[in-house]
Amino acid sequence: MKHASVIGTGSCLPERKLTNFDLEKMVDTSDEWITTRTGIHTRRIAGKGEENYRLATCAAREALAMSGIDAKDIDLIIVATFTPHMMMPSCACFVQAEIGASNAYAYDMNAACAGFLYALDMADKNICSNPDINILVIGSETLSAHVNWQDRNTCILFGDGAGACVVTGGIDGTGIVDSKLCSDGNLWKLLYMHSPKSLNPEIIQEDNNGCHIKMMGRDVFKHAVRAMEEAIVDILERNNLTVNDVDLMIPHQANIRILNKLVERLDVSREKVYINVNKYGNTSAASIPIALDEANRQGKMNRGDLLLFCSFGGGFTWGSMLMRW
Ligand code: UT7
Image 1 (cartoon, rainbow, N blue to C red):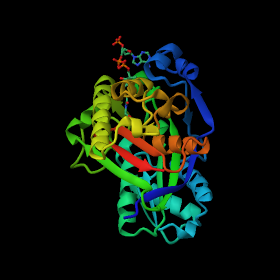
Image 2 (image 1 turned 90 degrees about the vertical axis):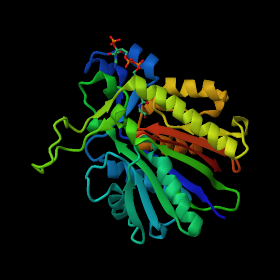
Image 3 (image 1 turned 180 degrees about the horizontal axis):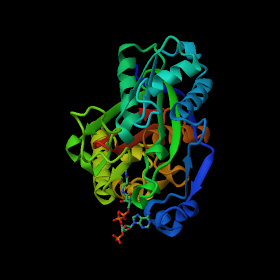
Image 4 (image 1 turned 90 degrees about the horizontal axis):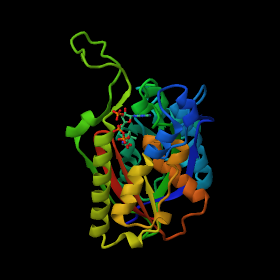
């Protein structure tokens, strides 16, 4: 059976860099605190003309150019995001119109930081039943629009950006090998963001104090490390593999301490782990496809390499994925 294989990648970051020193002037924090607790030095912040769908479109164009596929030959567009610039239509529909993918159907998917892996898994399932189709899978976020810039616990963590890839049925043995996706809605209160306040007088949520990301950082940290470790150990075991078989690991870029703990617990060589959280902060669903595009353009992968992805985010949602490049 053919599986989703990546034939082009792209990414797009807003122009403006917000440094830790800039943040020192905005909230009671310091470069030293942010660097030691998170590993983040700068993050990108979207400005005028850099709405979510525009970042997504720019990443999609790059991925299409690398793949050599015409936008008219794209059959499906999936955008993983929880920060679209409009609730309706979807970001994916805007991307479709911008690139002229007139033969595609398009929709958004929200699985927070795990969104890109969920979207890639969905693409793989489509390709298993129809290997000749071309799918654009995008992770795109403008988290800066949903951060409380007075809350030092969260505003230092997040950034904006988009990453994309074009996938199609690969030659046998390449593409997605397996994925393990998980959710636990019982723990939603540890990391969430309300919708805008309801306008229905019958349904007013008293505790809805705005569309800001709220997080119990310490609890999320512990769950994130444990959940990603379990998802990785499980997917490797059921494929009769060990971390030594992995050529490159591309984790969700949330925090360098989470990544360090994961590396330590898995006993994986640090050189095999792609890290760019220092430059972009946590870009949620965009973090893995941005990292994948950077790694690809830096020539870090060779055909046949085994890639390991993992992510964790609000919901909770999390998972791991193996891909033969
Ligand atoms: O994609 C998945 C989503 N989220 C994550 O992966 C985030 C997971 N969590 C984390 O990365 C960490 O928990 C944080 C980086 C958010 C926080 O680090 P921490 O070591 O867990 O700090 P803490 O929340 O326990 O706070 C320690 C202290 C507190 O002060 P007191 O109560 O000890 O006086 C905080 O008020 O640090 C204070 N603090 C800050 N100080 C300076 C919190 N934020 C800041 C800040 N600057 N920006």
